[in-house]
Image 1: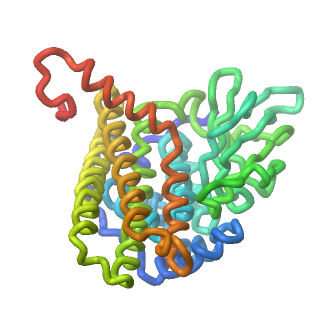
Image 2: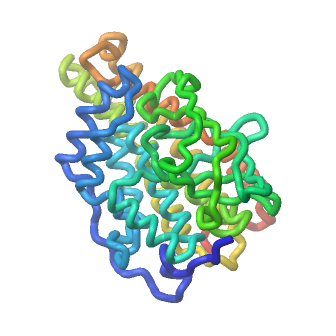
Length: 386
């Protein structure tokens, strides 16, 4: 197994306070490429390859890496802001890009310096990373045999299947669940694209893949068994996909606004009242998500993660409510006419509603209620940071 590295993606762990981050934004030219490709990819269920070429050329595939490895140490609010901008341009692109960021963070947190350096070289060369954790049946297992380590079983909802070239695969081994970074050119697995027949998010190409018989080398193992589920990173990392979802809600509202203006109904008081509530909910969810992200970045490893995870669940619940309200408001506002081509509203709504269904939003809502009702007597604000 690999020895854990230190201080590569979390400056507070090494005692070095994080410095100011540059304000990262999605270049307008890149956003145009992503937006222009989105409709065609939805119609044919194709992967948005041009969008990721544009992201690579803008240096955004390597931005999560430390500056010492040619990255921009992208984290915190700067990262969340960028994820929201990408989600606004295309939720499928945002979903796959967030998985790329997640994989690089996990390698930086739990891998060796050599493994992170190799991942950095791959990212600079255009490799796309992802984290494929969802599975059905017996799942993915890491087996030790006479010929060494092999995998048996597979994954479902493998976003970017056929295009993600560095999937990070949690696999159940003898000592626990272990992260396996498997280069697809060596062990591509057996893809089953027929699995992916979704309501929305078609362009993520999230198929099923079987890795039975794939060979695993010792250097493919990232960290120690159980690292993937370490808190608060495992649960707290949800703030990143919340930012993407809120970007999707932005796009839905922008599309509805365009329809209303074209129909001459944007000045109706009914519409203004409807979208006032959307604005309040969306901004509240964004501020909660930003605060949850700030707490995650600063949370010491030796501190009980329960308060932070409860706050992240609060942000998750607020984001789901805000996004659903935005979707309903858009549907009611534009009517059947606004759900027809050439308006993109219908596609944006499908993508947003599909993305909101995973992972486990009801569990987050239950956690919020439990934290509030289980608070000790005399507690004023259960969300106050200690």
